[in-house]
Amino acid sequence: MIPTSNDARVHDTELHYIEWGAGHAETVIAWHGLARTGRDMDDIAAHLAQRYRVICPDTIGRGLSQWSRAPQREHGFGHDGKLATALLDHLGLRTVHRLGTWMGGALRLHAAAGALHGRIATLVLNDLGPEVAATAIARIRHCAGRPPALATVGELEAWPGCGHAPALNRPQHFAWAADFFAGH
Image 1 (tube, rainbow, N blue to C red):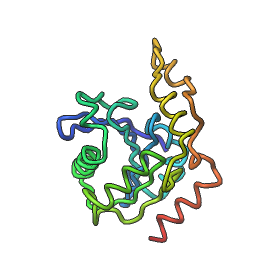
Image 2 (image 1 turned 180 degrees about the vertical axis):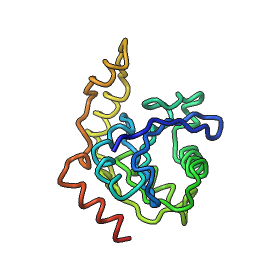
Image 3 (image 1 turned 120 degrees about the horizontal axis):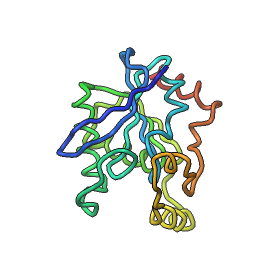
Image 4 (image 1 turned 90 degrees about the vertical axis):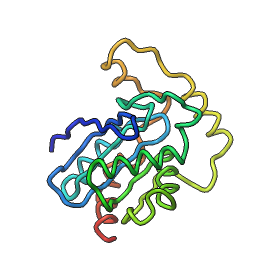
């Protein structure tokens, strides 16, 4: 299945997303972690697209989405909830399944209890716990605070960043995630 690259203008912000499995009725929104992009979800999205429409957005300031004009105000739970709600509205989606990795999971959890209350059928969280160790926070600050200066998109795509592929991009997890959404 070939994904499509799309943009949505919501709350005067251009959000980029990759869409897989466009012909399916049920939709999974798969949101990436802190210093990553929606393309992190490619492998699991390709698997889920056999049964679901899968939308993999780039958070504001990440990937191909618009950079924030006011980071102190726009990078947080409240603004993110507004953008996530507006994206669902833009796509004509009333109820969805949500998959979030680390920051994407924390934002989805907050939105499920607030802006998207009643609109999330199932919520799968990956790499998210009740607290984050100080060493992990230090590593995140080091990596996220040092964006590379790259000349081409090809260099960006080849750049490994400071991390590794998200845990849910491991094939042994694909069937489990699909079965979880199906059993809601």
